[in-house]
Amino acid sequence: MDIKSLEIFKAVAIEQSVTKAAEKLNYVQSNVTARIQRLEQELGVPLFYRYHKKISLTPAGRELLPYANKLLYDFEEAIEAVKLSSTPRGTLHIGSIESTASTRLPSIFAAYHKTFSQVELSLYMAPTVDQVHAILNYKVDGALVDGPILHPDIIEYPVLEESLVLITSYSQEEFQVESILHELLLSSFAHCIYLGRWQRWLESNGFAPMKVMEYGTLEGVLKCVENGLGVTVLPKSMVESRVQGKFTCHPLPEPHRIVPTVFIRRRDSYMTSALSRFMELLGITHM
Image 1 (cartoon, rainbow, N blue to C red):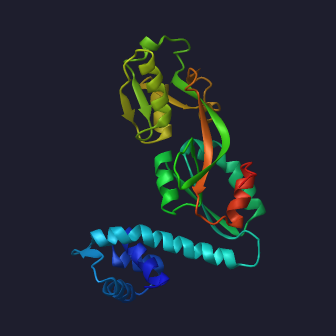
Image 2 (tube, helix red, strand yellow; image 1 turned 30 degrees about the vertical axis):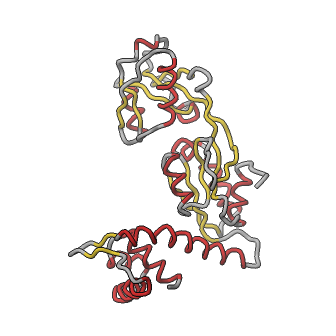
């Protein structure tokens, strides 16, 4: 078993196709097939189920995949660690929730790219729960998420605090809670913690939770609110430039209003110079 075989195994597992994996890695298809067969012979178990045009992981393959991810990640870290130069380079994989990616990251990425142009920046945008999964599986180097994150394998660093607002249509400048309970609570993804905070406040004050509708995109959610379909809950920073004439923002009651944004990384991951410089731009000094 070698690193190249694990790299091929991972690509085939992700693409669920030898042909697509070969194209992605720029390898001859027969070489990919031979490597997979050799790996299966070494381990003594089949790693893939083969169908007519598609393949999928066997239980043994699913067991191997997280170990392959870690070994490949450690191999990349080892290469970085032995480089003599401290100049940041390579690829920096950053994860972020949508609210931070749309409001805070553009200026951070611009400043980073201007100073460290040799580093290729990669952004993975997803909800907090998916970012935690990506960190634990070595898919990103670090991520900006809603905190706190209580996991023994993760280190978190405070970055900023977001203030949540309930967003209603412009015509609802003043309202009683009872007047919106029949409306839809709109979200761009499942299990949104911002909506969860509002629902918990409702329950703690004797109100029934509102019915939630997922709309898929943030712009779609805001357009629905603008047209009176429902209401939503978002960080104020995401909407303050779009509010005038379209929405009314109502601060969430304490203690549900403030949500900390934290930067997380795996506790056992190597701190590359590219990552440490990025964290410095976030205002993180103790690493």
